[in-house]
Amino acid sequence: MLMAIGARTLQFFEDTGQFARFGSQALGCSVRCLFRSHAYGLVSTQINAIGVRSVPVIMITGAFVGMTLAIQAYDQLASMGMEEHLGVLINLSVVKELGPVLAAVMLAGRIGGALTAELGTMNVTEQIDAIRSMGTDPVRYLVVPRVMACLLLTPVLIIYADLLGVLGGAMVSFAHLGINGRAYWDFSAHGVAMWDLGIGVIKGFFFGGAIATVSCYKGFTCKEGAHGVGQACTEAFVLSFISILVLDFGLAVAAKAIYQSFWPIRSIVG
Image 1: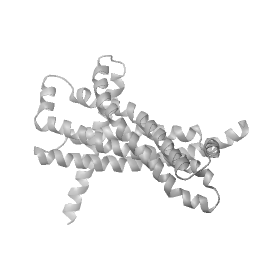
Image 2: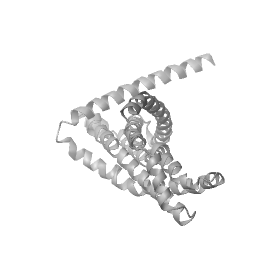
Image 3: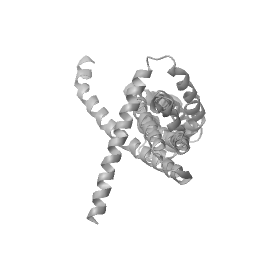
């Protein structure tokens, strides 16, 4: 049993090191490709596949998140006579946490699986080795466009999810719950700051980078055969989901610390 534990521990550190090396290489190539015009053609193709086709799913997710929050939170606020503050609860929850996290999870399922399956199939059929044999870096040619597209588009898709979440919650609040629209928006405007929206959007860069890097790494390192590709897709989604939750917690702690450190300065200026 001790030998098995030791073998698993060594394998974990080996996989972690390989992933860190892969991620640093992808990040370095992405930075260099920002200054090369020929890379934008490959990125634009991935933008259409990753971003444009994901908009309907993200919008539906955001809308139903806002509508569900309105139904669930109304009774608690109405019992305290604060139902007109419902907009603050819905909008803060959507723009800071639920919108970014659920949008990223949807992308991990839709985009992460597709990236892993595509690159995994290329790895199994030795297409990646063929690209390498022609003197082309497969990371720069295959991984960088996908990473850059996810980095650029995940924040934009989060904005779509936030917008539909806010509108969905407002629609249910006005039409179904009978809340006064003017008071709803007035309390929301005072309760939700640009800082809250910015934190949610900034999270998108980290979520997108994690999804793309994990998915591409699993595709590059998948085992042979259809079973290997399927297993890589499953592992990519699970690791992406865990990465999203861990990053969300870490960024929430960091954002709170930054906000509290600048709060005395804002009070003095105000």
